[in-house]
Length: 358
Ligand code: KG4
Ligand code: ZN
Image 1 (cartoon, rainbow, N blue to C red):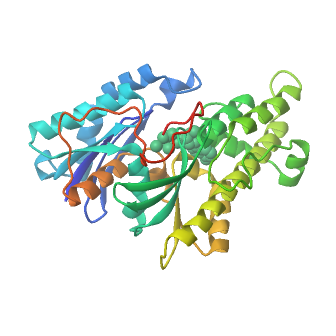
Image 2: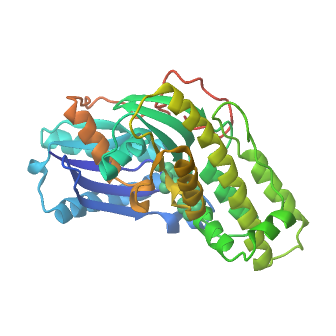
Image 3: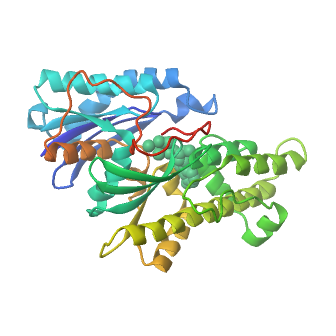
């Protein structure tokens, strides 16, 4: 089985071909970083236009890289939500058009489900498993019970973790994209302990019995520190220390929330090897990966972190989600409507926080 995946829900235009045997035949991602950099963040209208400009070339290149023609495909999978609706429509319509022209099944993929199913593509992880999804738009703890069956145990009540990284980086005068630049700054800090003494930061939600997150207080605390530093361009040593203290706070909060979820998982599911998976762009953070790995070892969990290229937005995960659906005999009509919001667990209570995306 070969499926073409298309991803256009945010600022990456991506196309990929994946096989049912978990082989990635091609995986192309075109980042729009340069288009959005001057604005310091993603501009939806610019994103949609950039997808329009590049998607057809990228799909052709992905097919050529895989060395196949449309006739060799078993289906076309495209992200149909959640995300920036203009961009989602571009990828969805391209996918539907190819499916219609070649009489192939169309699979409407939930972008979050694609992140959630990635460890099955990379590591063949069996259900059920615990998933920490940390990206620019989402911060959630989920149990993946089966394809299409997810329990959301925790979510942010305000900003997403990646959003917090990006805003904190901006306050430190670091360029967009904030997360990777903040991580780079933190690595040049020589003493993490001194950094935390000099720039103490709160640990929102630490110790709470649920698995929810909150990051807006952390961002405000970073702003308060930054405001007290001498005006003008910040001293790189101060930035390194503030970045290091910030990373430590994020790691403490995320591991605390995951520890809760692991205890709950252990009590709710009997599995031979309980597994926790981390996915989403923030999973690229080395300090966070290390902290989660240590926590998993401590709690007797296997730790799976897909390679960075498959953690951040890509189309291989969309193609794979398509394969998981097709295998279960599921495909969608060409009248499927794009969904700006599309929660993975419809039964989970919606949270009212400003930045919550699902
Ligand atoms: O999953 P993703 O590529 O896009 C979505 O949001 O769906 O995640 C992007 C987010 C951005 O907020 C970015 O700053 C953050 O992931 N990020 C990082 C790192 N690399 C990317 N955050 C912290 N450390 C990193 N190394
Ligand atoms: Zn994503």
